[in-house]
Length: 387
Image 1 (cartoon, one colour):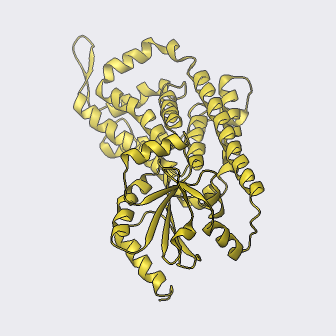
Image 2 (tube, helix red, strand yellow):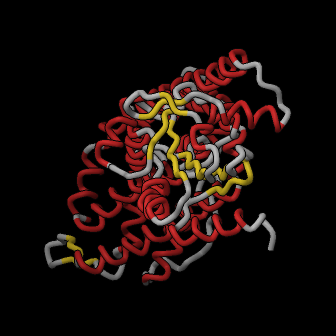
Image 3 (cartoon, one colour):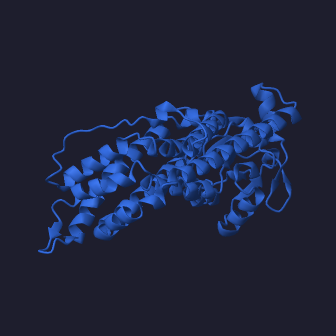
């Protein structure tokens, strides 16, 4: 996970709120949400019951978040496909982001992005309640407008190319809904500010466009770097695609531990090996880490973590910093060139490979496991992998 991109996506959520397609509608939405909480004195001064407006706004936000949750679930459904073609999707997505950005800046014009598609049901909003507020938020978030559409598409493209893509959608959602939450708390003051400072938000789309162009260039460069790394591995190795030759090659492949000592899987010949591929940014890896250590301490299996600088934003420095704060009795091996990652086709984290005492790669498991699950897997492979 790239923290800079995560913050940038959050910023785009904020920009979506103040965009010309959303900001002018805020007084209208707030008039609906505060319909039952509006009070006017004899002099015509309007005030709002803060608590009631805030709770209604919370339901409105919940409706918005439902849409983004459904989008995140949809991405996870296609996660295997997205991981397999991550570099290609990154290049295509980066190119689209640059095009979207150029459109927002005004250097090119795309008619499709200037069209506004909205679902407009009659919710009888003159009388507001919490359920209607929830539906209003859901309907609002379904709208594709010439402003928010490309920004949301940017978040989705970033999400599609990351193993923890849902975090980018969460960041975008927070950027969009936090201003709504503030508006619910300070309704009168925020609406007055919007009326007085309309010109202040005139260049919001151009700022958003510049950010999208930067994101697009970053994604293309990152994907190109990954492709170049894979090509280097292929050119530097003479191993064939035959399973037997490949396993023998990986069994004798030289890796380094964190102290720089050379280690091969064949050093543990005669023992079962559980080889766990992990990264510093994977929350599932972090949750599984103590479970894997517990299993290692209570079994005769040789357990190993494998990490690669190529999978980290700041390379080896990320791994070193991570291991300082995440001590474990399990040895960590460093796959400097990503060779083990590449030939084991590791695209999701954590992934655990099981190697038998003779060096045969028996099976692998994607996803986090518990100590008990590791023990059951060990019993399964020892019994000959038969029911």
